[in-house]
Image 1 (cartoon, rainbow, N blue to C red):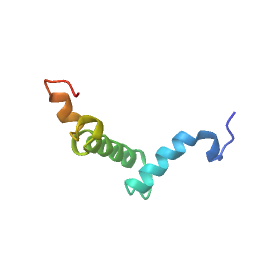
Image 2 (cartoon, rainbow, N blue to C red):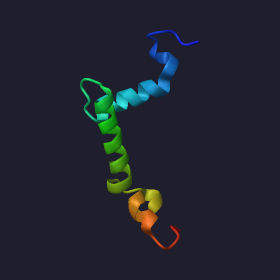
Image 3 (cartoon, rainbow, N blue to C red):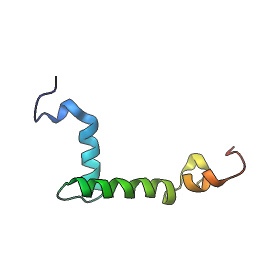
Image 4 (cartoon, rainbow, N blue to C red):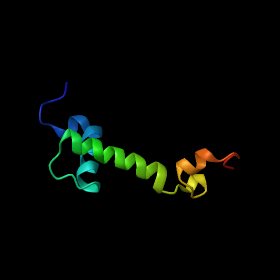
Length: 70
């Protein structure tokens, strides 16, 4: 059973919180701030960030291809 206040008991959730705070600049965590940051991260990952495994296209562009990736 997890102890209250022990961050080592839920490392995955703590890592997500750290990413939201450090990478997305959330100073005072709230549900709406976290939701906005997560939506932005998903958008950036799919529409802006190129992926080497996709021939340096974004996932959105790769999805629209009519030919296989390799």
